[in-house]
Image (tube, rainbow, N blue to C red):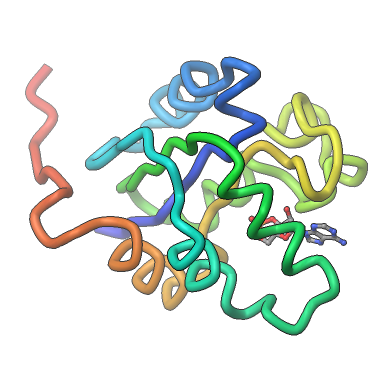
Length: 143
Ligand code: CMP
């Protein structure tokens, strides 16, 4: 079963959107298998955003993601990587459609509420960067 890494960024946490976001993923039928509220170290932020190291906004990106708690999650389900991206909407909230998380709540490209892995390779890399072995829970839905 496919898994992806999803994170509510500091703006989403401070605006009280954790519940709304978790609820949308649950209603879609995806399964939460790991979650934690945490502060992000400078080192983890730089590793997470390594592909943007040369971009002019890299410093801003790292400063923002380390500015307050984030809610890091692993979601599981059929086609969950693309499905999560669809639910999040375009990176820039100005381009994101209403009904998507960024379209409904996003303010700016820097403060865009949520991050989700963009490919199976990213999902694997980000899950192992943010979560240790055994932190994800494998369980069957019984009700
Ligand atoms: P995310 O999905 O977390 O991955 C990279 C992030 O870089 C992206 O969301 C945006 O929040 C951020 N980003 C992209 N373009 C810009 C920009 N021009 N200025 C500031 N941040 C940006």
